[in-house]
Length: 364
Ligand code: ATP
Image 1 (cartoon, rainbow, N blue to C red):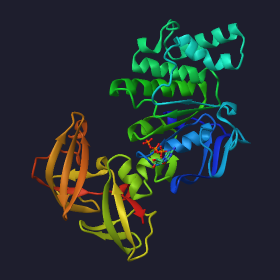
Image 2 (image 1 turned 90 degrees about the horizontal axis):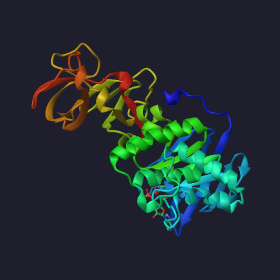
Image 3 (image 1 turned 180 degrees about the horizontal axis):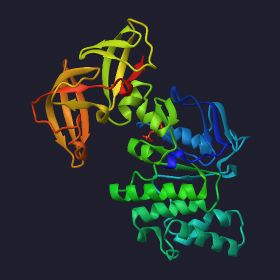
Image 4 (image 1 turned 90 degrees about the vertical axis):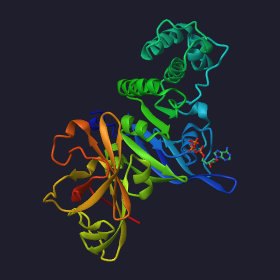
């Protein structure tokens, strides 16, 4: 899988204590991170969390109030955008409407006074890269949204940036096109080996495409790590809620590896060690919850009632109620024959098992 691929040893972008205020509002607060060479890195968070501002400081469109922006080992905090080895692709394409595709792609190269034949060669290369050969003479208004975004991408790549910054480049497109372009972007990134820093509020997009993700909330990084880690081991309630569906169960430690909850007493994984009395949250993903008709001989078993069933085609989602709490549970339809994945009826009383290793302890 792409997430196992080897990344460069070098740091492409390093942010050191970066803070940006607008008036008395902190848009970005003390952000520290390193993006590695050739990495597909995503900044993920809800609207207003500061991800665009952070990207704009890497691009040079904003200057931090505090901290440093290091690109390719050089301090670029005060360097204007056009002198940085980065290019940005925006959500709204930002193509020149009166120019042809060719002129749009060539614009930056013309500004750099590159020889004509070299420009022509690069434009052809870029058009083939984005799968639109033969579109040289079209104008942006003669193209679809997806095609325009490809042109915007070509225009950025033709400058051979070390780092490509992408600010929600797919969010103006419809779902089908978005999914297509996701795959194209991933392939392109892998082929060219350029570092991508990708801003999105769409957690699925970030999970599908990234090597690593920084989840942002209120100007700060909540959690930064490899994609699977962000999904499997959320460290804060915010991340658990924002990424995928998560069941959060309030719990209090009664022993280092035992908690009591409204659903009963649960044992935890060997790696967790709590102080008795400590209040925590237990997070478990819907697909990790196992349901049984007969009481299984497993740890952390309790009774629940099926309150609702949502059929989505490939899976069944059960809304369970137990101890006054609602739990979401998902089973893949092809798994239904397996024990722990039977099909259940509305209002049925079932046995629920929470595997200790699948319970993630979130410490407040
Ligand atoms: P979105 O996805 O909605 O663009 P975001 O996560 O990218 O959100 P930012 O655009 O970085 O968030 O904005 C972070 C905060 O800073 C917001 O509260 C925003 O209103 C504020 N902000 C951003 N740019 C400016 C500006 N030029 N002047 C004043 N406030 C700003």
